[in-house]
Image (cartoon, rainbow, N blue to C red; front, top):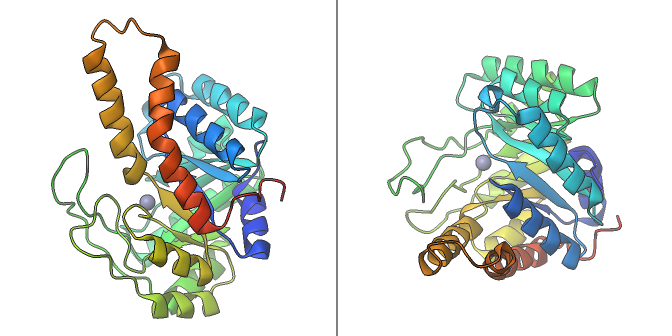
Length: 289
Ligand SMILES: [Zn+2]
């Protein structure tokens, strides 16, 4: 069933686990992610990545079809907009029926980030939609799409600033920068757990970890212990998904085989990755919470 992010994170906070937030780019990918979440009876935050949705012609009807799928699921599902880069994009997602949005003003000044986040929070409240924002900035490693080094630099979260940000904006959860990166790491991840402890001591809302892929099982488990309640994940299963899909089309250039066969193969590469993260984050069998 479709629920808000606040509702899902309440359960995670009580149970001391984190909920995985895998991105999806096609309806098929979403179906596979929901199937895996149902199989392991885990709540899930289905995340639509940062695309210029305010320019999409059929965004509302597409969202309606996505909501139907989420609502039919046997586990709690939050439909979340990941990295909304502008207030307009977030308003469009709220209007279309997303149960949660992220307004990402982390590349702007503190004051501008506060202003953008407050505007989205005000609009979201009226519709019972949850809001995530980011304080500090999670940079990028190597992008698997561009195959080059990311150019935006991380800025680790300052605990005092994070606390002030949450008070000023009334945001429901906040993404923090403690050393993880989007995309692929260039070297070994170096996670600042001391900083996470300080943020946790000062911030009252659930904390979010972006850049889960490649961070390492131990680091993720330790982050969850340290108070992380939502873990974003994309690169680690996107890579095998794309390569399996491409090799399927290479083997079947006329696309004559049943789409079911393609989905089975895609599921076979996505499932082990998601299952592993569901285990590390502690959300398996929490689907009834
Ligand atoms: Zn992110």
